[in-house]
Image (tube, rainbow, N blue to C red; front, side, top):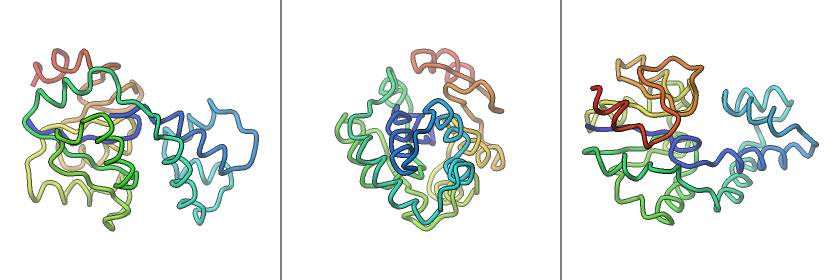
Length: 189
């Protein structure tokens, strides 16, 4: 069983850092709950909604990477990672900060590949290019993500999907915690 994972909000609880970075970038007193709602759609939509120029994306990444150094992996995610044959990550986060967090919690050993979409020149998700790149070198049985844009490419490529902590998106499976992953997902395949 090979899994393709999103990173932010799926493997690690980085949303507090993403929100803090966004609010800092905006230089406005924004409602953090509302910002989170927009960021869970996708950052491009949030930028547009709040009138923030895409030219500031690099600064946004710098800020949320800085704030995310204290982010934690979700409970029981390591059990899931260890229970399957292979894991890969496809993320919009820069590769350096992704690897730093994985190494900090001794999780890098579970991943055969980490693809940073923008650094490696792929069109951002929900485009399928980064997933197609992974499929050239390995079979993927399941894609795990917390936003629709993580699962759209999988659905377009006929790969089963798991929505993490988001019952409002189309997926083959929905889970709220990784303690249930093996019984509610892997044992059902």
